[in-house]
Image 1 (cartoon, rainbow, N blue to C red):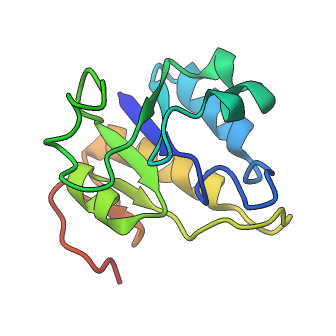
Image 2: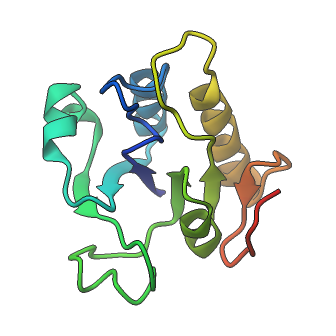
Length: 145
C-alpha cells in the first residue's frame, strides 16, 4: 500500500524533533511491504528526510495539495493517488482516507501516536477499515469529532 505521511505537526515538531516512534513505525510499515512517502504543504521536504535519516525508509517525497486535493496531484507531480494518509490536517485525511493525528509540537515521551497509527494501518490492510476513532474512510466528512 502507498502510505503518505505529512511532515509538520505529524512527524516533525516545532522544535525539529521527530515524533516518538516515527522511525520504528516507518520501518515496520516498510518491512510489511508498504511504500512510504513523505509530503508537505510546504513543498518537497528533503531536508527533513536527510536530517533525520529517513531516506532508506521512503519511496518518495512530494508537495502535498492543501486544497482541491485530488485535482492538484498532477500539478504537484504526485504520480498516483495516496492509498492511505497520516496527517494532522483533517481535510486531507477525509479526502484520501487514513488517520488523523493530534498535532505534535514538542518532544515528549508520552506521545504514542505512532503505535496507534501502525495498529490502524494493520487493521485497514486486514479488513479495509478500522474501529479506531481517528481512522477516516476516503470521502469522509469533517469535522472528525
